[in-house]
Length: 355
Image (cartoon, rainbow, N blue to C red; front, side, top):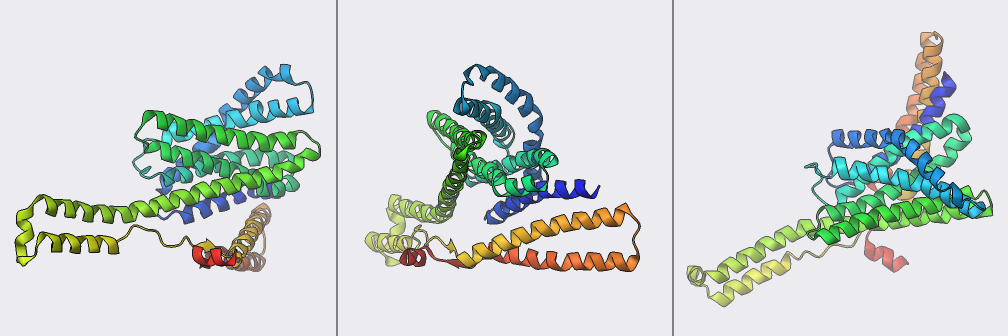
């Protein structure tokens, strides 16, 4: 009983921490109910993915003539293509038309959420067979890989959602799905060779994370520009209105030139240029890392405590002592993780000077 709870917790906690991080980074948080349904749908697609993956892999067995061909068939036909395709269907068929999906950045949030839902259930299945060693390894590799392929797919899908041209929309959707499949398949293929080339899975993971973070930051900048752009557009509209009605320009004895110049000056002061992009410092990343690892350990600790307390009747004093001893480090690591989310940051200019 206790070992089952611990293994289950080790499979779930890393995904939940990543999901919390992504949710906390969103300036306009999405409805929690919609995020929960997207997460559960991401987990539910494990059911159709398995038979589809087995069917596709059986079709590719005729090409399995060596280590690399076998690894490519297993990685792409048996994993990357069916898994990313079903994640795409969750986003395209369920999330796409939701009213809450009202800006391109939302695609990143929903893409990561669906992917982490899938990663959570997949993790439970793998950890059930492999134990704690597999749990620790997948928490640092497979879970972030799923999350950031979801970020990449979601970034392209978010842009496609608001594209005006149908051809551009199709191209963005195809690019998002294709890049997620390519990165996922490459990561799995290196691992499935079972040779020293498996070490190349790590740089593939780092590339995926870097690419996903770059797309996410780009959409964040567009989100900020859109907010300031609305103010600028309002003043441009007012300027055009004044120009189109010369009779109103004489109000207060002001000439056309004076009013237009004054209005343009206001428009200049309300420039839509973004302030320097803040960069998370090493100390901030350190707090996030330590807090996340600590919360993961505490989560497993709580599962062990629950198994002990509910498995056999315990003395009240012992139970209270155990709960308090587990609650104190949990609260401390929670505060450390939240502090890491909040900063400290340094401006883009300062980061540029240091580099």
